[in-house]
Length: 92
Image 1 (tube, rainbow, N blue to C red):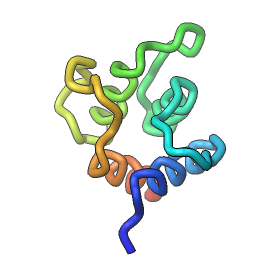
Image 2 (cartoon, rainbow, N blue to C red; image 1 turned 120 degrees about the horizontal axis):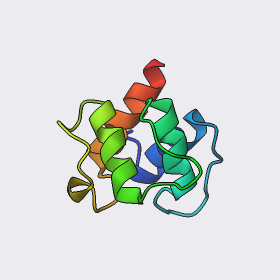
Image 3 (cartoon, rainbow, N blue to C red; image 1 turned 90 degrees about the horizontal axis):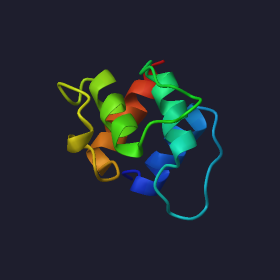
Image 4 (spheres, one colour; image 1 turned 45 degrees about the horizontal axis):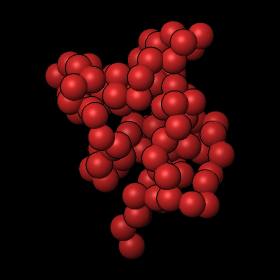
């Protein structure tokens, strides 16, 4: 059976040391920051960047985007993006 978006989000959360969530929810800034660390996208942890910047950086670092322009990441990750992130984290 194909994992759902919620399953993928929770797999990613657990892979970066965050906790699984029962309810369906997008990533918090803290969870995105943990994913940034896992894919080696450098951010300032004192003042976390906006979510679109972190999403764009994550996608750029895993070769899903050619740049880290936050204008291209204004919405939460799509299922295909979550699958790509989970695959990269599984390979580590």
